[in-house]
Image 1 (cartoon, rainbow, N blue to C red):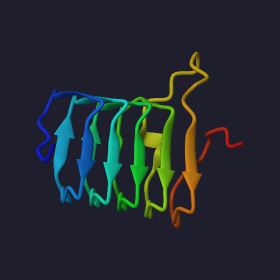
Image 2: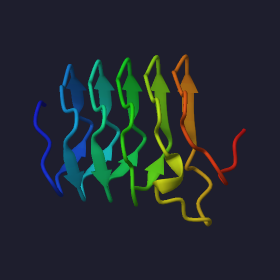
Image 3: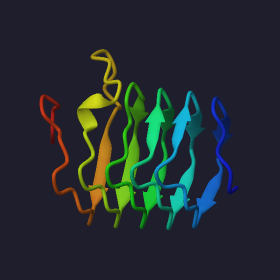
Image 4: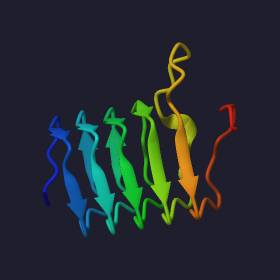
Length: 117
């Protein structure tokens, strides 16, 4: 899979080596998807839903997740510099909004007001 479209539904897709930096996507839904060696730097994911997605060796620096619900996502060996996680959609009644970071670069990322464990 190498193309992303507004309001697209993606289930159990693998995105490998996708260069999609400085672009905008709205209303898309990703469930059980895997992103490997992708570049999403400075991209905007507006009102996109991510459920149980894994990112490996991806660049998401300055990515914008405004109004996007993020459920159980994991990031391994990713660059996430300057991401403002507070812009995502964080309803208070859900408890599985967990994000996991392993060996990631999180410089200048904002988690202000979010619960960190």
